[in-house]
Image 1 (cartoon, rainbow, N blue to C red):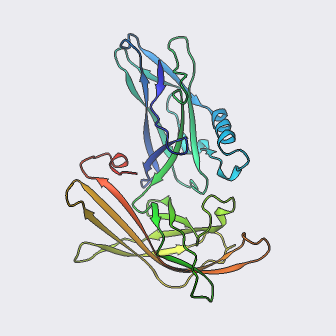
Image 2: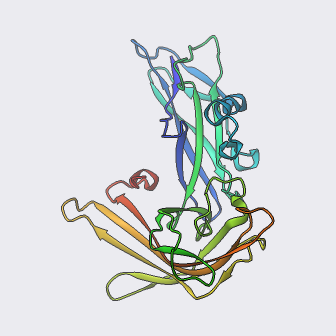
Image 3: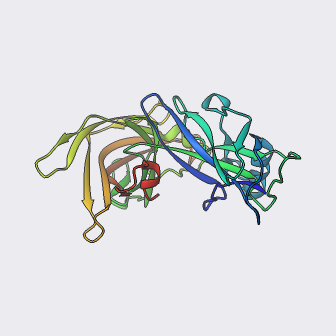
Amino acid sequence: MVSFKARLGSEGVSEVYLRYNRNGEVTYNLPVIVSGSQSNHQDLYVKIEVDPDTLTTFNKEKYQYRTDLYFKQLPEQFYQLPSPTCFIPKGSHTENYPIKFRFDNLDLVERYVLPLTIKDDPSYISNYRKGWRKALLYIKPFNNYSGNYSSTSMNVYLDGQTTNPLVSSTRTAWVVDEKSVFFYAGVFEEKSEARGEYKVVMDFSDPVTQPDGTKVGTLNVYAPSNAINFELTAPATYQLREVVDPTKKYLVTQYCTVNLKYKYDDISTMPGKRVRYRADGSMTMARLKNILIPDEDQAIEW
């Protein structure tokens, strides 16, 4: 029986973390498995193709009328299937099927999935257990600054006020390019249909290493959309530092802290009315890494 090895995450899709590199192109190797009571006794050419119907069904069954939560199919210009088949030679039980991705100009405001299926063929048996012949690859490019930031130290006030701040526990920073990420302003709901208007980009300059080993630098912060009237009210900075686990020396926690002061308009909570907010504070991302594992997307404990 032939199947994919694509472990499902909490949202029912397979999260694929791929480092964004300078030219935006990276290869992901999807394992294809032959299982059974005997070893594989013949050469197999496993047919693989894109399967949009499965993604459509998945979205409707999981989210129903909440179309704002739907996963979108990754557009064709951002991936390439080098071959329509995965060759598994006689005696082998696992082979990798390479998929090329290109992330230049990919806007991660949408949640993109590449849905694949193993096509039936008389030369092999597809594994029809739920999910085994399907792979919903949720593509998550990452760089040194992307990830989940703790934002409990980022206070959001009605402009002109200094009490009763709004606070979001986390903000997710998504990749723009090798040295840039974006997040959503203030405490705006990250899965709202209007989230694209609240996109705020942070460009990280080259850092300067301090005597204690920490690295500090400045941020260029802006909103691509003029709709929210974004305004940076003080210079934005960031700090990078690493802490080695006291007992497990191969584990290193990498911290990235950004310090921001900005204002923006809420244009969607009350239709037809703008509400000005002021954000002031810091956000910190912690990433745990096993330095003994060379493959970086696997070394990071997501």
